[in-house]
View (cartoon, rainbow, N blue to C red):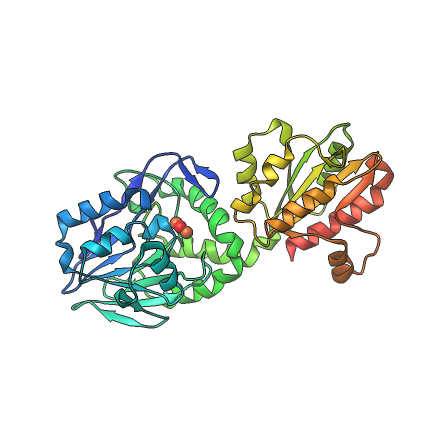
Length: 407
Ligand code: FEO
């Protein structure tokens, strides 16, 4: 237990494993930051991952008689934060679960908690703990529908759960002011934003409005470091990313190629997109590590998937990656299928089916016509044999793809 502000204690868990997370591996581990606020009524802000639920409850019971716990605030229902709730609520008979209305049915189903144990809050609601007060502010889709942030008025600490977090396990260091050089965590902070928050970019600015209207001394996140200095810099990064991300977009081209023509197509697409000011990375999936490819897909603003056709189906190993898409946070991400073929070209259609099944915004011919009026570009993008013979169509398709990820 470590005091981070007056009568507010970190009671979380540092997880220094290589943590499996949405089909990715968190190489630097993570932490599950829960906080205990001591007052006339004691309140817990979030819990820890399901895996550590029992340990968490045992540890908490050593520092607080559990029958003196009045509230368990659940800012976000995912089990890396609510995971100890089921065990805890049965051992803390006087505690109410404080959460948004959308969180209630999820938590009831996840942990078999009866309706009478919930206290539903919405934006602007306040809850007195005795000497001090909490207020609540909904932040929907950051990154799931039921999320909120909780503010402790007297200390001006904002508990943001996933928002402003970092996936790092740094045992012994909690506040960034304790780091020898706080700049060292900035890259991890940005990677986290890109992976978790950026897909929900449109919800960032309303959240920033909430945060900017609260006087803050500290942002107590639920993964990695507590932000206790230079708050404007971290808030500003989210705000700028939400505003300007479209000016600095990244495209990823994944391909495998039997005869070299699909590879040549990938190279032409890469050149065209680069010429339009887009950062592009091309990866031959036959030579790449699958987990690394999945990470790159998460980080890219748009992804082109290319394959030759072999017996009316995909060639090579691209399908092993396509099968993982549904497990990633790619819903709404722009994508396109392409490929060169000889006597038939079904691979691109097979890719298209995977993209749509994963909820990606897979470009279709009808989208092109509707948004640009161009009738000489078809998606999936298929060329027969040598792509050099279809350069105008590939160039036009590149322009459509570039616009789709920019706007
Ligand atoms: Fe850290 Fe959305 O869970």
